[in-house]
Length: 333
Figure 1: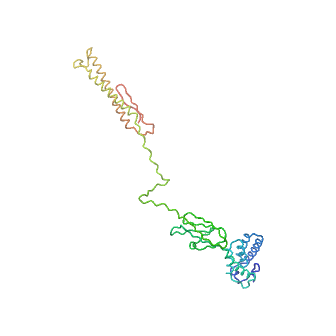
Figure 2: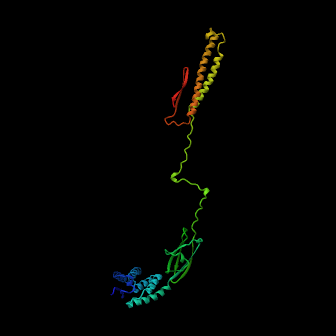
Figure 3: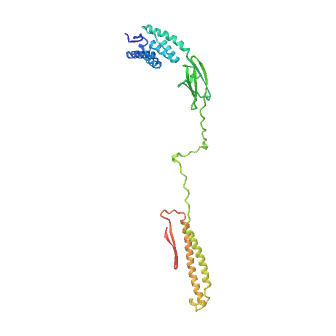
């Protein structure tokens, strides 16, 4: 029972193609793609024809689809791919009812494979500069070369090629090379070693810094200590009181009447009475001065105590006062 054909090639049950599970839909799709490929090739669109022949060969995989695909690769200066298709045709089993057209395609594929072999270029890449024990990574036209095959000859199509090489995280070395048909070239690619990591700090020198979010702010400067105004005021009052009290006391003592001149503090008119009056007045002034001096000492002590304190409610308010027979301070603390 016939399943379908492409360009005179018949697919029947039991042949190599039917065994691969090609359905009637595959065969019909292969036929249409093959016809479109032929049309594009005749119109001069080799790249468009190549894609159609790829589809036809993938769906049908006959010697006829294969030889047209291989010939198109050859015309596009891609002998590596074309020769591989030719060799694939030779590897397929011969169908019992294979047509003459398929047999001719097999013979043409064998001849074309030899022609394309002579057009394939060769490239050998020698990589230098890789540190001992580190394998370089090499790619040619974006395809990575297996590490085990780095020293082997690479078969390439003639034309321009780009070789990239690097070691681990080291910089990439780019080399461009152009190959002619059948030419063999050997290039040397020098790679740079990866950057050396900075040495780890020793355990004794290791310091643990707080994370940025936990940075400790420097301590605030100590508050400026201010001397209370009571200190100089108190010292001034104390000094004045002591001075006036001392002088007045001496005047009082110096003007006291002699014994018997003023019995019971009553003096006859004259100098004794004047002396008594002066002594009493000086004594009163001396007493008041010493009281003021004592108040000054108290103010100075209070000023030293409250100096430097931060009173957030407006501070300490102290006012001295001096009255007849009395002196002191009043205010809020």
